[in-house]
Length: 440
Length: 100
Image (cartoon, rainbow over all chains, first blue to last red; front, side, top):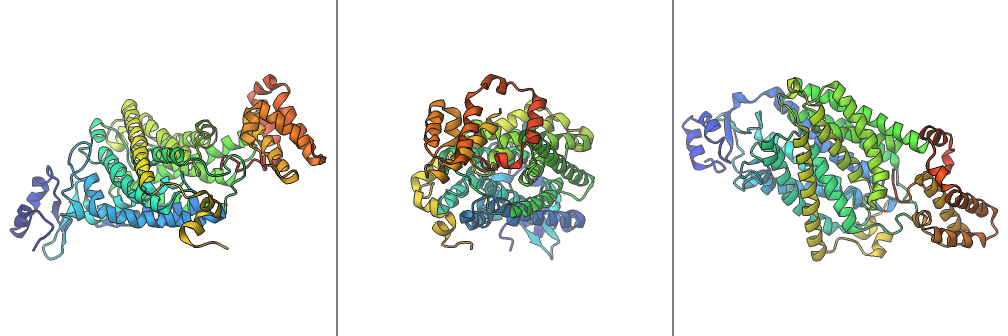
């Protein structure tokens, strides 16, 4: 019994003709079934490790990074949001998200043929298993989980923009809709070979556009639509514990190796290059931010160093499989300076209470990275040439779609459950008002 | 003087007024609206605290005196000033309206 395979695939598998499936199903939305001998142990081991590293970025990396920056009365709520999103998106991904993002379908959206991971198989006795064409030497189970960790961290990033004021129920509704209506389509546009931006030749190695511009734009819209926190601009919102933020940033830095080098889909030279440039961009990002802050404000802050490292990591993300060392150094440096402006000068100009600077760091960093990929990409590394105009179109399209779709989803959620906690609950803090817990 | 520096002085004054007089003010508005700033200065001068008077004087001088020359300070001079400024100068405005 082969319940998850299409009938014709099951017949071929039983008759020993399964390798034919590699060709016969590549054009359809069904699975690509291969003999176990096609699987690379090294690639698989690396991808499994990379998956764990990317999950580590959200839990506890991003959770701690954000929790350290909010006020004490909102720490547990901020941590809860990351855990809840991880659980929620995991289920959504298996049920329908993976199918929408990573099956051919149309240039705009994948099909629903692979809901509940339909067609994902592993048959030990027959020596057969399914793979995704994007990573043909790795079991599809690992590919699907690796991509899931990206689907988790992207909405988790948005939480920083509306920190300290959103209802927990509204957050769950928003994240459900956003994951399916924004993240999955955008991942399909950019990463699925049939997606319209992939077809145009837009380059995004590990998610500068899909993850960071996407989350940054949604965060900016959320900050506008939820409005400013009470007392914003009038009283100091003292971060609870920036030590936690540093620990979170360090976990992000380490986890980013899985994010970028894992996106090579193999344990090979390109993954090694991605690893190298990722680290260098983080370093110059930290130095760029530090220098800018030192010159403008007179002293370099610890939060600035951590933020600069994250900015560099964000910016190198789309470029990590395409650029050499000099490109990485410059991308990181540019992102460090640009994101410092994004989180200070630009933030003032925009006037939105983007609480933890999701737009300033991830949006601006993502834009810098997407555009500079078009400048520094080298064909001998990535095997493709980049075009600055195409990069700009891809970044602009994702920014515009995310902004608009997020606004519609937020409006809808506002009508159904209400986005924002009542004033007294905001003053009390979300830990107590939303979760009935508190830190002492 | 940069917007940031002006905002730092306004925020410092805001904290002083809250402590000494118990009134809540809006530092951003103090910087962008001269009429509001004048009213806040008048309010602050009604208190006898020397600390508050010093904060008022610094803010008033920064906001109303020689705005053109301050705005066009050479970059190097501006950087030198920033580097020489004591840490306490913007401590009071830290985390007001911005995190980083």
